Length: 98
Image 1 (cartoon, one colour):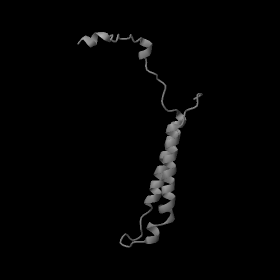
Image 2 (spheres, one colour):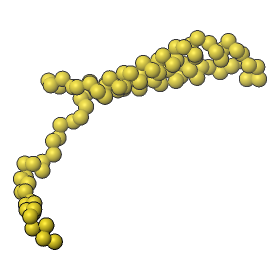
Image 3 (spheres, one colour):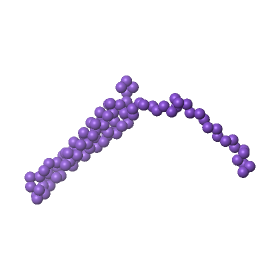
Image 4 (cartoon, one colour):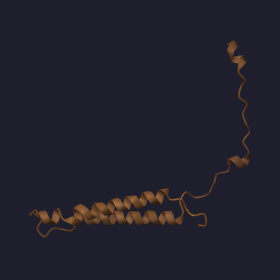
């Protein structure tokens, strides 16, 4: 108990009203939201391309239709491109003049 007297107690600091005011600047600008929308549209297009269309006969497995270049190559590239656009839009610093 005697050791507690060696250390001074912390005095509370006063917080002024200017320190309590919140910074109302938005996190993202219009251009960030526009890029996010473009990225989302690219991802949706990639998903639609990957899904493909309806088969003429659902009982018949058409290998060339299921494993076509658009479904296996183009669609994943579109989805990854859309994700990269989204990441860029999130990390992009907005210009000061917006």
